[in-house]
Length: 332
Ligand code: 6V0
Image 1: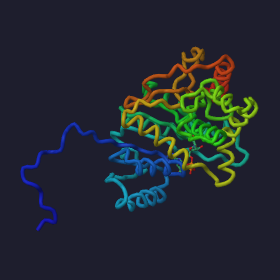
Image 2: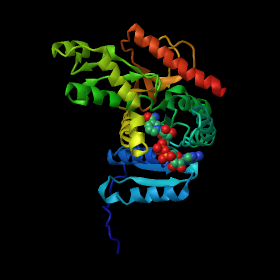
Image 3: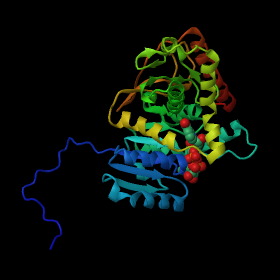
Image 4: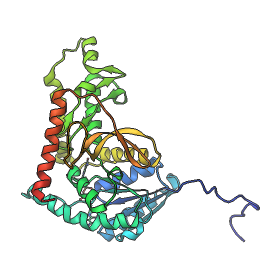
């Protein structure tokens, strides 16, 4: 006798209900933090993890599957083969080579370029309609490489970029002003790294531009204090890595927020790495760097025209130059 007695004459499931599938490539600290945040936020019906270490991968998959009693019903699968990713709506790439002691940044990048040659083409082949989100570092150059290797239109290639830097920035401003970080509108653009650009001129707290807010609160406007907040943002990752060995929770939430905007077509604006050609006076150069971009089901829907003063625009162009120089050195 069947345990479950079906309802007779039940209507078939609605054909309009979309089934979502997200694949995460790389089951390291970052990949697993992203996977678990996606699961707890109920963002997908099917989650796939790919890594080239089969035992570690199976261990991570089982560990997540064993949480089934506490999570929404999600199919969780993993494999070292890319066929498992077929038909994904979103593919998130976190696989990356680790920097060897004394290894130059350029050498590491060359190794990651070789790695991406084995990852991106099969992902694109098995999911020709997917949106690709790149997390592996250096994220801006690797996003450009993923664009070239995938052959996808640029609106379907996104680097996680300064979405995380901007969250750190909002946290530090909120902490400084003793307000809620969700009330702080603040954005870091440009390179995810040392040449990132803090857009001070467009920051607001609860709708009030920050500079007049500081005046109203009679907090002395000190450019140096603001610059120090930006420096702290730039050093954040180094600090966390030196203390715990890697970063994971914040990047997990950061990428899950991108996944939500894309999969649920939220049309939210995120500072993420997009093809910057033609925006903000960057000109004709083919670089990916972070700009405030609106994300939805189709990937990047547009780039917001935020106000930047001359100094900020110049810094953004310098950031583009820094990334371009790396690409030239790599010969790509
Ligand atoms: P990790 O813990 O070493 O994980 C990397 C994973 O990639 C490992 O599980 C490897 O087995 C796997 N891997 C290596 N080669 C392959 C391959 N060919 N195919 C499939 N899998 C492979 O590193 P961690 O998870 O800490 O970091 C991953 C990447 O994210 C690094 O490049 C970081 O620099 C980058 N981050 C980017 C951030 C951002 O804001 N963009 C933030 C944090 C980390």
